[in-house]
Image (tube, rainbow, N blue to C red; front, side, top):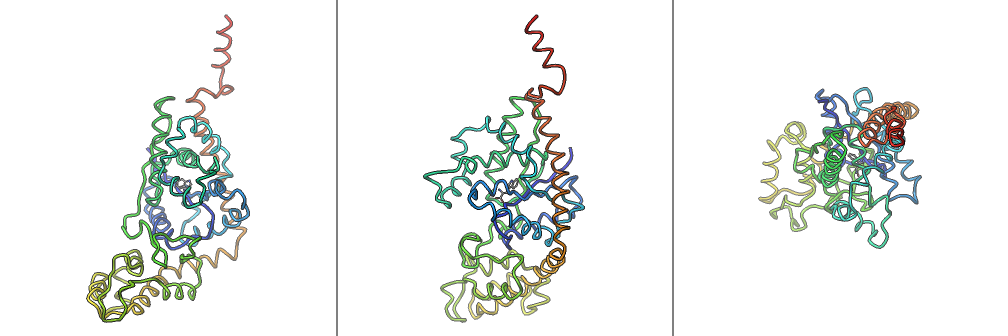
Length: 360
Ligand code: TRP
C-alpha cells in the first residue's frame, strides 16, 4: 500500500513557532525522508470559515501568509502538493455522505469541538458547520487515502472520529476507505508549546505568540519579555524549570550544537537546568541564550520568506497547480465512494437494467 500524508492548517493567522515545532518541522523531515509516496498539505480555508463566516477576508488574506510560511520552512512544491481546501468541492460532497454515519451526540462528545465551543462562547448558538467540522476533516483525510496524518495532540479526537467514520463506511458499503494513523510530534515539549506569557497555549487571540515571520528584533523583544519562574526573584534563588516557558522552549529548540556554539560553559541543557535549579543563574542570561537558539533556527526561514515574497505570483501558481492535482485525487475517491454506495447511477448500465427488471 502507498504511504500517503495529508495534513493542514486553518488560515486564520500567520503560523508561529508553536506550529513550527509541533508540526511544520516534522513535515519537512517527513518530506525529506523519501519514505512517503505522496504528501498533501492543505490550507483549510473552508474549515476556517466554519467559525469565521462573518470575516471571510481574514481567511482569504491569510491563505497567502500560510503559503509563505509553508514555503519558507522548506516545504517543497516539487515534493509536496500544497493546495487550498475550498478549491476541492469533492470534499464537501464526501462530507455530506459521511454526515449520515455520525450522530449528534457523538459530535457533542468530541473533546476538541467541546473545548473550542467553550473558547468561542458558542454554547448558546453553535454554527452547524462548525459543529460538524470533524466530519469534513474526515473527508479531507480519506479523500487523499492518507495513511499518515501528522498533527498535534489536540487533533487526536478528530482522528478518532475519522477512524470511526472509515470503519462505519467500510462496514456498511464495503471496504473502500483507508484507515489513517495519527503521527504525533516525538519531542514532549513540542506537543504543546506554551505562550511567551506562560499560558498553556500559543494563540493569536492571547497575543502571546512568536511568529515565523517576526523580525529579528521582534523575536528578541518577545524572548526578553518572557514569563519565567515567579519564585526566582534574585539570581541566587533556586529556580524551577517545570512550567517555566523559557526552559520549555529550550527543550523544544535547543541541541548540543547550540551549546557548543553559543554557551560552551555548559555541556548540554541538563547541566544548564541543574545550575538554574541550584540557584545563581539569572533569567536574562538564559533568555539571551534562548534568543540565539531561536534566531539560529528562524533566520534561514526568514531569508527564504523574503525570497518568496518577491515573487507572489509564483506562490499563487504553486497553490493553483497543487489544487488542480489534489482535485484529481479527491475526484477519484469520490467516484469510488459513490460506486460503493451504488449511487453512481449514470456510470454504467446496471441501474437501468435494475429499473427495467422491476417492470418485467
Ligand atoms: N483542524 C486542523 C487545524 O485546526 C486543520 C485541518 C483541517 C486538518 N483538515 C485537516 C489537519 C485534515 C489534518 C488533517 O489545524
